[in-house]
Structures are given as C-alpha cells and as structure tokens.
Amino acid sequence: MNHFKNHWDKDLQARVLESAEKIFQERYLEIYGANGAPQAAVKKGNKKLARLLAEDSTDDEMGAPSSSAMPPLNGEGSKPWVHEFKAYLDGVDEVPNGMTTTKWWGVNSSRFPV
Image (tube, rainbow, N blue to C red; front, side, top):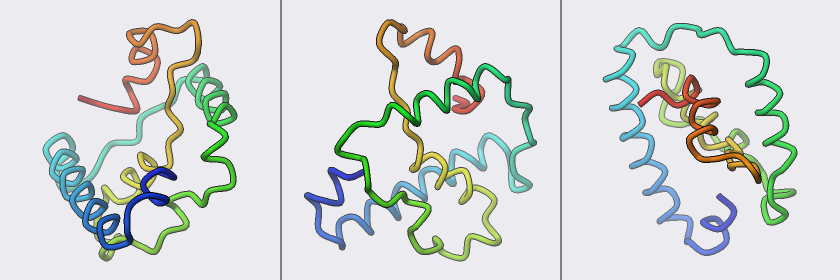
C-alpha cells in the first residue's frame, strides 16, 4: 500500500479504494449473502504463520500507517464486509522463503475463499 500512497495522488487513491470496496462487497455477498460470514475456527498453526508473516514485513512498509487508521468507509456499521475488507487491506501476505505457493494457499485457504 505504501507504493500507492507515495506515487498516486489522493483522488486516484480514493477512486481505487472505492472500486476495490465495491468489488469486494459484490464477491462477499455472492459467497456469504447479506447476513455475513459465519465465524470460522482458526487453526492454531495458521495463527503462528500469520504472526510470522506480520513480523516479516518489508522495510518500505515499516512505519506506514495501516489502512485501519483510515476513516470509516461509507457507513460501515451496516456493511458486514467492511471489517473483512479492511483486514484484507491491512494483511501482510507473502510466501515465506522455502514455501511453495501451493503450500501457502493450502495454509491460508480459509482466510481467502475463492
């Protein structure tokens, strides 16, 4: 996200964020319906990997404000997808050295339903 904040003007950032939220909303509603996603149990191993991935963020992202510091998106109280959209934007998802992309998706498939 830092790259876009550094190289795109604020108007373009706002338009892209609005478009991304719309696409995310459509897909979310297609998967879960208007009532939102059921609370899924997170495997203990996934928490450890998520913590590890968060610690392994790149230097250019260090010190950058997360998107959760952004103002609320379009009345998020009535929109169940907004919390997950912000979590998606805040995610630090990289494939660790030595792990195949297939293995990474296997570990993270519950977080990113297709």
